[in-house]
Image (tube, rainbow, N blue to C red; front, side, top):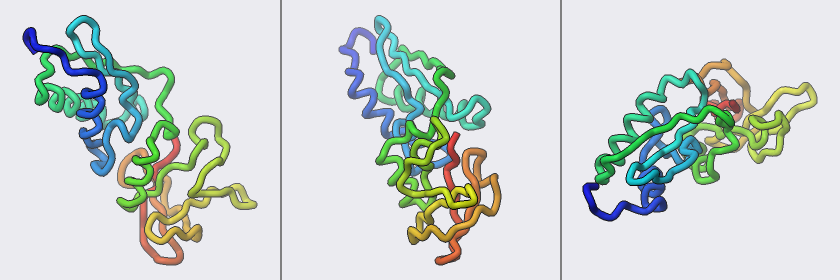
Length: 174
């Protein structure tokens, strides 16, 4: 920024809220909860990112997208830090992010299942057999079935609604 006043941290968070996730572009990186910290060390902006999992294939694209966005806003001294501990959890998704996933046709993860294995959520329940039932993001029915543990990306599973017959992805708890 060459002697100019540095943008405030709140402004940087606002800019980062506009950077879409490369695999699910309907949600931002802040909706996803992977931006863990933003601060300055002298005149260098430090952005701390926790990937959804250590082998996430989108990590390099995410870092590039962060750099591109912030460079576009005039940030010329930038350092990205990767933080693996504590590991990312689907509990870090914002409420707005969950709503955006649902509106996009992806069932958001069940509250609490990533952190401690307990169901606390609004969109799923445990049946008497211990099977997780995910509500359809299209019609809201609990009459769904898992087709595959693997969906369109590694962080999603493939489901189908037995009522509206629509297929959908479930954002798995990690």
